[in-house]
Length: 142
Image 1 (spheres, rainbow, N blue to C red):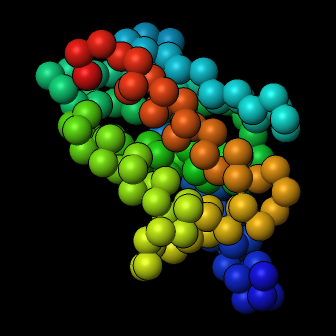
Image 2 (cartoon, rainbow, N blue to C red):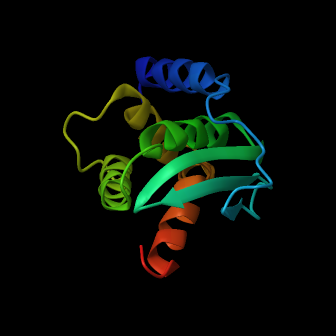
């Protein structure tokens, strides 16, 4: 990986992980999803409220590395106030970006996709997304 790509990865992720967007503990949420990476210890709770087929409110709380925190913040931004159908499409798009199948992904997705070049970091990048995807696959009526 070139030095320019490493710098992009670091700059984009460090800026995003500082964001407090969606970083909110909500014990009263309809659904609380656990996202845990036993390899590195990253652990988040994702809080969801679903109404009439829409994710009305999404937030997360917990701790993790810059990659998992940046990715969780992006998840909140990407899925908030979207229909469950749109959420599934957004999840598919995220995974395509992570797999390098999108030719012009947004910069933050591109930076997260570069995590595969760092041992053990790809799981950090997909941690919260994997938890939401599993929840949507298993949730009846969604």
